[in-house]
Image 1 (cartoon, one colour):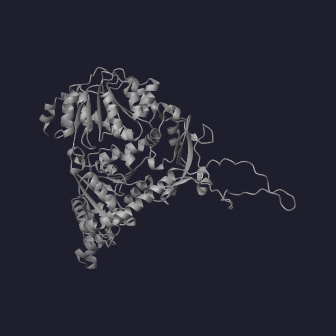
Image 2 (image 1 turned 135 degrees about the vertical axis):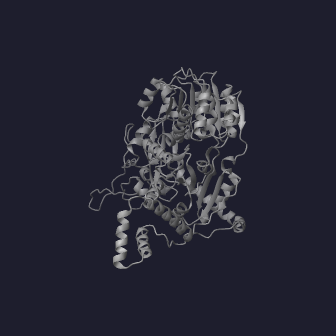
Image 3 (image 1 turned 180 degrees about the horizontal axis):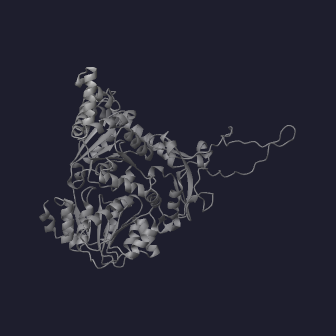
Length: 637
């Protein structure tokens, strides 16, 4: 390790020792430029992509200036998600390994606030957390920022996207004016620039110009395959590719469980990581991946945000992301801090346009990867079998087995090679050494055909895009003028996920509104971060003066409902409830009854008696309302 390079930056001896123990070879560009600025106590505005080593860029210099005797918070770090908060806190702990009496505390929504209150009373020099939970502690006066010396905003553009920027400003306003401030962001939108100008007016700027720096050291390849053959294609890739740790990205939570279970059935050590899992289970899964107890993690974007595990050598995009920035974020989970990485993307023939868009965004060419053939899979299995056989031959307890086989050969006048072949045949039945796999590769387009089809497909792409926009507009903007929608009770409103499955939606009431200066983005950010509900399942939001309504999937689990009741937007609790069911309503799989219309006179029968008739607004027979609960099982179907 080139420790002299870190030593020349001026970091303290205990921190330098930790860096040496971790095996860091040389500072990344963002580290080399940021560390001297922060060591001198100046403000910093840093622009760099994910995976460039930003955490060490601010943690190493700030820890070098820490006062070991002061037990109240000296360093405050704001992150957009709980996963990133945990990741940053772990990094601080590792860098401060040789600082006596050091304590770092991650605070975030969804965790027991009582434990956080006790930890804050005991004292922590560094506090890392999400904006919502930070504001909770400030309101409780359990977090004292009066002695904060340094404040860091990590992934500021992500906090803006999730609607936290107002909360961030509220926290910034409560820190001492003389405190050092640093802001790191992959991009610099106008709102972030305004915050920087207001709170970091004299900041020195560090900008890593090359946007594709994150992906330059990552080998990118793609495989064209039909949608229903992806699982078999994935199995082949896992058999042939030599990997240490791997993350497989999918779009839906149910897919993480389904694919993980199927991989386990095929002999791979895998685990699911999604927002439906409790925080404890998610942390345990990441820990197992780090320790090598799990080799493959199947995850959604939200669950894997901020994940940094050194042994991740491969990232597989099982489902191509619709957002190009998400692709960059995904593959950034490998090739961290200067290491080499591999990224493989699965696309269907219809998704070629998305592939071209990603190439344009990353300014790189993603090379085609030929699907491993039967012979390649066979060679790999034979190699693994012979390696295991060699290890078994070294076992000192084979004498009894050898005597048994020799006796069997002599008594039956057999050839020893035939017996070995028969034993091998029996051993490989569940995983054949010479598999006869179906041809699962869709016709792969070469560059010339891609260029030839580019112009011809543009018109179709535009039509598909316009159609998707119309569908999205119809889904998000509930039209009262549409008879088919107006006649449908709120509890029967549905959206479709990326797999085309119908998801029943229910309207919830939130006790925040226009009078609280709330924007829809604030509500989306609170729900997505505090309850880990993907934004694709957050439906129509309507703001009223005193309250708001939002459509969320029917059948919300009790723990998620309780979390959202306590979640805050602009320092005010959401206090979520089912609309028209009272403010303290609990979640229920039963949808609320639609409001009754004005009473109508009862039609008279021929004999003068009055009979009640049920009719719909369009005059057709009434639909029989079915009880429906949104569950993982429904979605998997």
